[in-house]
Length: 114
Length: 112
Image (cartoon, rainbow over all chains, first blue to last red; front, side):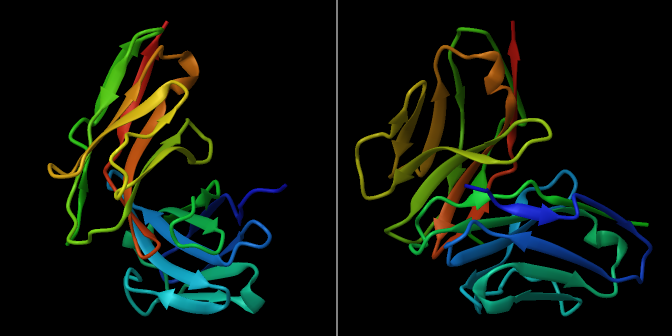
């Protein structure tokens, strides 16, 4: 069974540009999470989808970040316009129906904003 | 803010020996789960072990075990018979309605 996949693995963009990150969860996993790790700091929660609905988006830093989950399958996280402080590693995770189930993580997307 | 604290940025251990990684957390909830995840260099994070807060018995998974002290809000990870493949960044985490709150991570080096 395929694990959680993320695309791209790396992205380098200029300040002010737009970037879209994609996450494909494990098939059948209703819960999808986005996290971010800024250099030298802890991994922080961004938001949680249950199927196609946003369950909790309390961790989204500001309105430059937009997350969607089309049809309850893959998810995208768009940053527009990107700022220097958005640099970091963005992780996606998915889990089965219970919110206390193990979260399976993707390899992450390393975003660098110059 | 409810936090998770890992006070050891780096730890090292000799192969075949035992090492303990510390973690403390803050929560106002009575029911929650605690996790240890490991991230080997350039690889994905994987779950090492999970503890349900309502269970008094400490979780074990082969060479990995936890010392869960609920009153003290402490959740340490013990790795016995350390192997070279245990070298990784280890993250302690706590769930709250699904979302994980992580500690800062501990880099574990295993010396042959």
